[in-house]
Length: 169
Image (cartoon, rainbow, N blue to C red):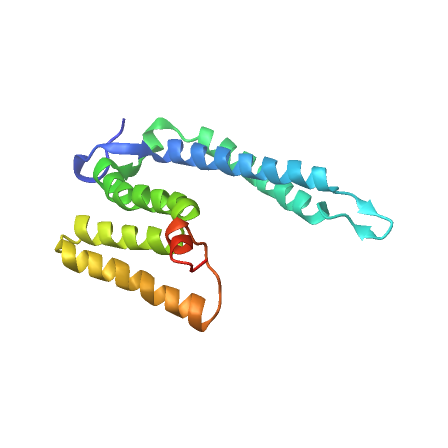
């Protein structure tokens, strides 16, 4: 694995990142094309079918990704610099992993309970705040957003079992 600035160990090279992103976007484009064909991607007697325009968007994404993949594969080893260093990647993952878990919990626990847990743990872990401060801000934040969205704006957000138990669903 190559080295980054000041001899830091690279977690990922530019070539690897370019290939991964090109393949990911190509897969996304293929999903769009597949679903567009399922819906109908032709021009009907009354105009375009529902999948007509998304089909071409997916096709453009796939072609662009193929060109990016081709260019990435041509990157020579001496030009393949570090994309991200190990230390930098750790900093990103410290935020990314809890955020992904939070998004996953919203479906089960609802947005308010998940947000209270997320904010509380983030403040405690990354901010090094006392438990009582972290908990106060986490719960207070969720209560404030509940009042703003549910009561004042009357915009329902995903709720979980706690809100159902309290009769707030």
